[in-house]
Amino acid sequence: MPRRPRRILFIHQNFPAQFRHVARALAGRPDTEVLAVTREDNLLPRIVPTLTYPYRPDPDSFGHPLAEHYAKRTARGLAVASFLTTLQASGYVPDVVVGHGGWGETLFVRDVWPRARLILHAEFYYAAEGADVAFDPEFAPVSGDALAFRARVRARNAAMIQALVDADLGLAPTVFQASTFPSHLRSKIAVVHEGIDTAVVAPRIGISISLRLPPEGRTLTLNPGDEVLTFVNRNLEPYRGYHVFMRALPAILAARPDLRVIIVGDDQGGYGPSPPAGSTWKEIFLREVASALDLSRIHFVGRLPYATYLAVLQISRLHVYATYPFVLSWSMLEAMSAGALVLASDTAPVREIISDGENGLLFPFFAPETLAERAIDALRDAGGHDVIRKAARKTIVDGYDLTSICLPKLAQLIRDPA
Image (cartoon, rainbow, N blue to C red):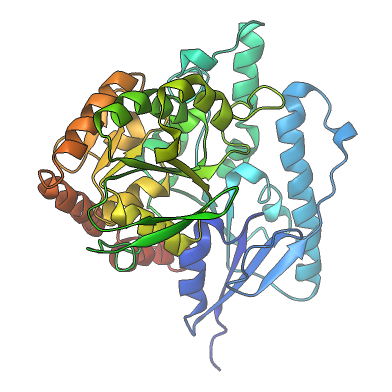
């Protein structure tokens, strides 16, 4: 009698999220059956068979402000577990459950399927000092009880820690992210990046691209040889150095009269604190330096379709990336893979990948004047950094390639653990 396929269940409110490549790859194996569970209002593409769970929390039940973060996660976890019991009643039993520890969705999986192997994306552990919180003095709490502030930060870890304690394995994309967790839990965390498709994210010489510029929709065409500086983040916010970048732009534009600056990203939400009511970080820091800028050469293009975003990286003469000591963005690795010269902040997650002058350039996070100086030098010497560009791509191909390195590791850890 043939063995049934190994059943793997992915749970993520924004599925496919970090599991896009590995879920699709596992679903393509004849010996593996993949199912995903996500929130009912998730409109992202269904890359594998997907079911949805309802989640309608009662805000009045969240209690003390310190408990609110955990209460929201437990409410979501209970909603997921209740939905999973319907799967259990139908006879479905997974061999492996894979989820994200930070959303609470896996908190009660053990109470439905106690024998399933449980694997978590261990993305980040918050601390009141030494990482992202209190890193930037410009956005430190203005006043209030220091103990209460530190307690709020610590309380944010409650759901993640409970989930990781119950899990068999955690997966962290970088050494830095794994290092943020308490030492007694790090032995449960394997470091494997989700992977960069270096066959797709590759240099393209001599391309032209056309971008529609909001809000009026006029077209900007960039051609081979144009001097283009790029800055990309999901959201334009201090956590990703947007304020530092904007403060460097006046000097950069003044020194490079033919330069075009392409800024990709939304002005909504983000990882860090919210801007004052009625404003956005984009507008706040643009207004701060607007009088010193030639605004006709700065183009905010919002979010782009992936192919267009990739073309922006490929045509870039210099790509600037900055981050607090926090989760590393895919965009930096993709810029390196696309052959861009990357000028990045000298912060812990970046230093794990980039060595200054070897496969990229670094600047102190809080020094926009140094960012400007290094950017001007790099833009002036268009061909003088080809060795660094090639080394950057080699770093990604040799260490983060999706097909040859990351995907096989992830698939084995999820499906066939030693």
